[in-house]
Every structure is written in C-alpha cells, then in structure tokens.
Image 1 (cartoon, rainbow, N blue to C red):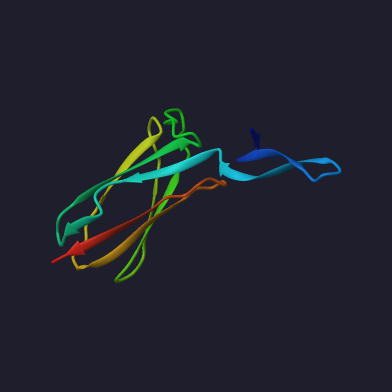
Image 2: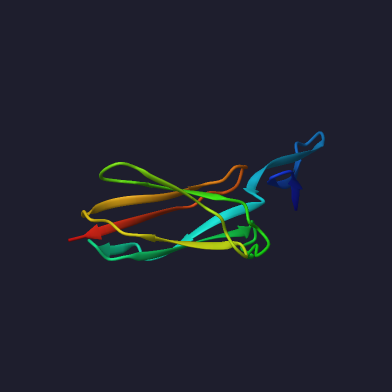
Length: 124
C-alpha cells in the first residue's frame, strides 16, 4: 500500500515481529519527477534537442505543472546552467558542443522531486 505525505510517496507495510504487528512507512518515491529525453550521442557542432517534462510518480504526464526546472550541464569546460519554464508540463532546450567529450545533463527543482540525469557523448 502507498501513502502520500507532502512531496513524498511512502510504501506502507505491516511487519509481524512475532509479538506484535508494526506498521512500517518508508520512502518509495517523490510525488513528482522530472524526465529528460533525447539522444545520448551526437557529433561536434550538431544541435541535439532535449525534451524535459514533469510526470507524477506513476509515470503520468503532469500537463498542468509549470514549476521551473533548472538544467545543469557539466563536462569539459565551464558548467552551464539554465532555468526553463514548462508549458503544459513540458519544455525543450537545444544541446550543442563545439568540443568532443562526455557531458552530463542534470535537473533540479525548487522542491523535493525525483531528478533526471542524461549522459551525452559528443564525438568528433
């Protein structure tokens, strides 16, 4: 059984200790999660569209969600940050690199949620 407590989804289990039955609640997921989707490989100078969207903990799109999503790209060179505002629960940005290497695209929000990470390999 699941229970929602604020931003968190808890799994609730009855544990029989032999003398009593204890109710145990533990973290299962956050109510909302960010999804990143796009290709994981590209070449130098080619634009790679990345889709960013909100979903609930069961994988349903949250088309009413407009909370900002911060994108952080790390790899060779200076990290890049950008804040996106979804429309109908979704937004998109273009990733392009002028150098080859492996880059990590991560997300953040202003409240607890399951964040996303995408590794992109840029070849010559």
